[in-house]
Every structure is written in structure tokens, then in C-alpha cells.
Image 1 (cartoon, rainbow, N blue to C red):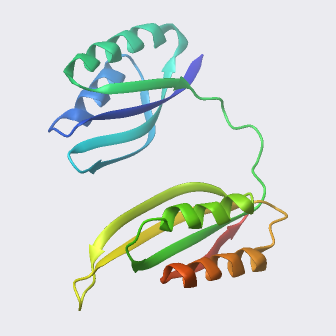
Image 2: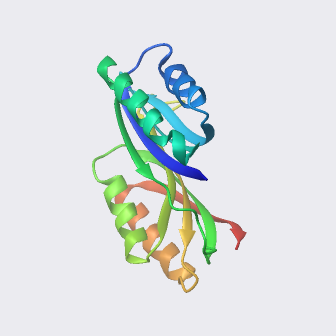
Length: 176
């Protein structure tokens, strides 16, 4: 029987970090299913999902524990297979504007009030092309609940965007 596991990793960034985890998973017969990883500042962080035979799980966990001696932190959780289809719509949210504290807090508060699930979120600070001022840019993939009042959510986001002096675009990706 195969067991899915979700792992989070964080470590000071260094060459070969992902390879050491991939090698360990492969050496124990595991299959790397999906991952999201990146370097932020001097740290490297990621989340990954693997599948392993039940009889090899303990050996894999012990091997991953040994990797932690190299200033690598790993948290491992069992992943329950998705059985129910998630209803609702997927949308893409883009945010661009002058950087200031509170942008993520205010936008995500509006999403939480509408029971919107944030499935992916990326943000960064960049220099504006002409002025060189610091811009905040974010992109999020959202799962709207079936009964979401999209017009009301857009109005709420537009009001927040006006208060924060940022541009917000909201586009439906697909219907589920």
C-alpha cells in the first residue's frame, strides 16, 4: 500500500539541498509527486508531496531525520487522499502598488470574510520601471465557494485597493 506524505523543509540556502532530499526519497522507493520551493533571503523553503510504500515509511523518516543534522528542518505529515470534489470557481487575483505595511493583511481579510480559500500566493518587491520606487506585486490563485457573491467580493477588494493605493485585478480561471 502506498502512503502519501507532505513535507515542509527550511534551511539556509546551499547547493545540493533539494538533491539530498530527492536522493533520500528515491533511495527508499518513494515517488516525488509535486512540490513548491524557493529561496527567500538567505533561506530556502519548500513544501513537497511524496508517496512511499507503507513498509518503507519508517526507514524514509529515519533517513530524513539524519538530514536534519545539516541545519535542515523537515516537518512530515500524512496526506489524506482527496475524495470529495471541491465545488466553486477558481480565480486569479493580481495586486500591484506602492509598498506599504498591511497590504496582505487587508486583502486576505476580505477574502476570509467571503470564505475564499487561498490556494497559492506569491509576492515580491520590485523597482518601478520609470521611478525606481518600490512596488509590491502579488499573485494568488483562489478557490471561491459555490455561493460566493463575486460582485460583492470585487467591490470589497476595489474599496481596499483604493484605500491602499494599489491596483487589484480579479479574473475567473475556470468553473468546477
